[in-house]
Image 1: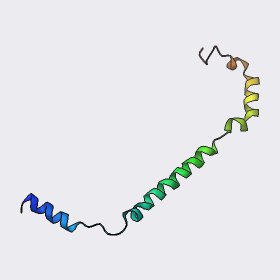
Image 2 (image 1 turned 60 degrees about the vertical axis):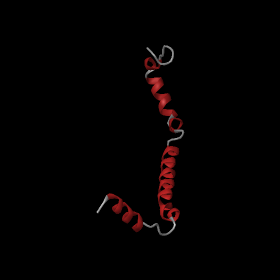
Image 3 (image 1 turned 90 degrees about the vertical axis):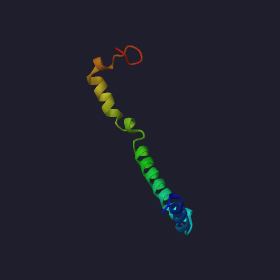
Image 4 (image 1 turned 45 degrees about the vertical axis):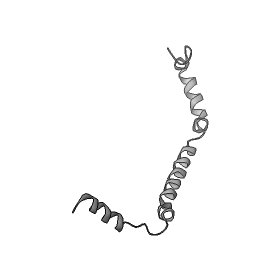
Length: 75
């Protein structure tokens, strides 16, 4: 059996049945749900620093030497 004959037989037997878009829709739906979940996790961290502003103020009062900065955060 030659390579050309094998390729011809393989081409004959492969047929696409059904709607490819309908069969692969689930992959897009899963990706959409995953991105929504990741977006929800990201949004849950919004404004976290302001939720604990009283702790930051208390730390700043207790450790005044730690708050000294020499331009752009470099010492």
